[in-house]
Length: 109
Image (cartoon, rainbow, N blue to C red; front, side, top):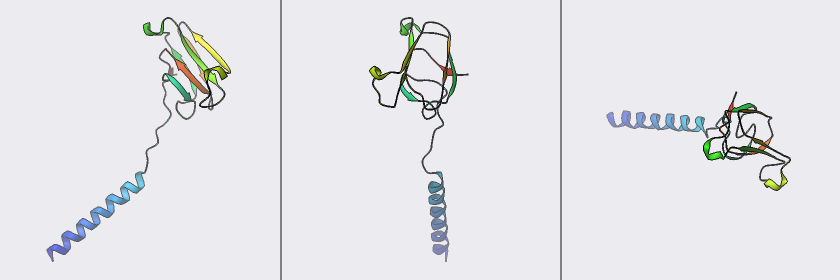
């Protein structure tokens, strides 16, 4: 009798664990609120909105850049716009923008 109770409890625990794992699935992260170096898609990788920076850091050699690209994977030579920043600045990013960031620390307002 005791063996049957232990087996029943173990089976119930295993079933509950499997249900929780199936419900959780793959985690989906919200878009970041800070721009990172390199290419990112606004609305997917980073949240749309107005970002600010206090300006370039010492390692940015006095400037930082944001380049707008026509699509993800585009080369810098295909850029549709490029802005350089040398002091405290703001930039508005819209969902769907594809950008490449070089330098500065940008945070969502």
